[in-house]
Amino acid sequence: MPAPVELTEIVTAIACLIVFTRYPEPGKAKTRLIPALGETGAAELHRQMAEYTLAQGRDLRSRYPVAIEIQFTGSEQSQMSAWLGSELEYRQQGSGDLGDRLSQAFVSAFERGFQSVVIIGTDCPELDASVLLTAFQQLQHHDLVLGSAADGGYYLIGLRRCIPELFQGITWSSDRVFAQTCTIAQQLGLQVSQDLPVLRDVDYPEDLMVWKQVTAKISVIIPTLNEATNLAQTLATVQSGKYIEVIVVDGGSTDETIAIAKAHQVETVIGAKAGRAHQMNAGAKAATGEILLFLHGDTCLPPNFDHIVRQTLATTGIAVGAFELAIAGSEWGLRWVEWGANWRSRFWHLPYGDQALFFPATVFRDLGGFPEQPIMEDFELMQRLKRQGAKITIASASVLTSGRRWQKLGILKTTLLNQLVILAYRLKVSPIRIARWYRGKNP
Image (tube, rainbow, N blue to C red; front, side):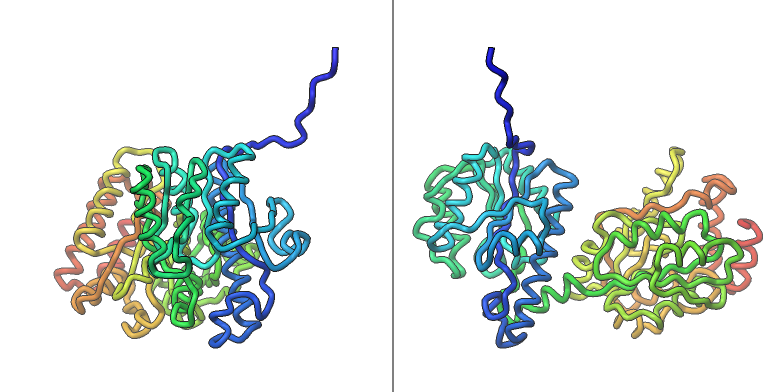
């Protein structure tokens, strides 16, 4: 009896993400940006954008069973592999215009057994893993998924079967690509998903601001005082971000807080007078980022927080953002506390510091920083912004803060204590007096 045939190649994922790109060779990459950046600068930008896009693809792969394939021009496979990593699949792009190459890429992928295929380029830095995930989810119920680009093209196309007609008669590199594709899809009777957001490409010098917004450096400022129990976990979530700097401002810890910060290779560890306002303002003075994010030492940021922060502040006129609040602990009462905090934040536009406030650095400095008072500095700063008519927004993601404050006195007592503090502050009781009373009640 003959031995069974061994399969030498097994497709473990039924979905495939194909990334169209080219090798970042000066003079051949991002040529429309050469007048603004020069040949070397344009190629370097292309390199950064391609690596950023691929990072989003890898993030997707951690959440969804998808194979990633690079289809390239302008080099050999060995160069591409050395640049982007040997674990990926590489193929030369086909011949012809963009439509021909897209059609050939879909044919090849479906012939290899994939049941859903999405193709993207590397010119859209606003495209993230969440959008990619939505695209593949939409493909489960639609024949065609399109992501509309602001310039009239599309940054993403996904199919469940090859449909060559979608790539015929299209005026490529024009503002009619998306509309023409939708017209063809309608004529073919396809189920089309257009639920993806409209995103911006970076093709011309005037588009460079998009890339700057997406990669703006975030300075994460963490005031600490004896946070050895929580700081390592907090830093782990912070350091998952890209284009960030971390600044720990210690108020005189007597435990291992500073040693933990240094062990986690925090770029800047400085001391300041104890008190969150003093410490956060000291951190802001040391920061070099275009965005300032203030994070309590016992609070963890959500996955992809850096992208969320940049996207939130990219909206015109937003002066400050914050996350929704989640509290560690299984007690049902904590869920009510979360609900109340998030309702207050969204409907009264009044987030507190434990929700990780973030600002454009220029806005924060124009405000003069946090008022240097011993308590309610976050409340007072938000009130100032509201009086100025500034836009305050809450991101649709949650930070996770320690439940220790509620565990000390109990959920009900702690909630009542917090409300009494707010009432006293509104009644113009001195913050110094409130702080002494609060810390006596909540040691």
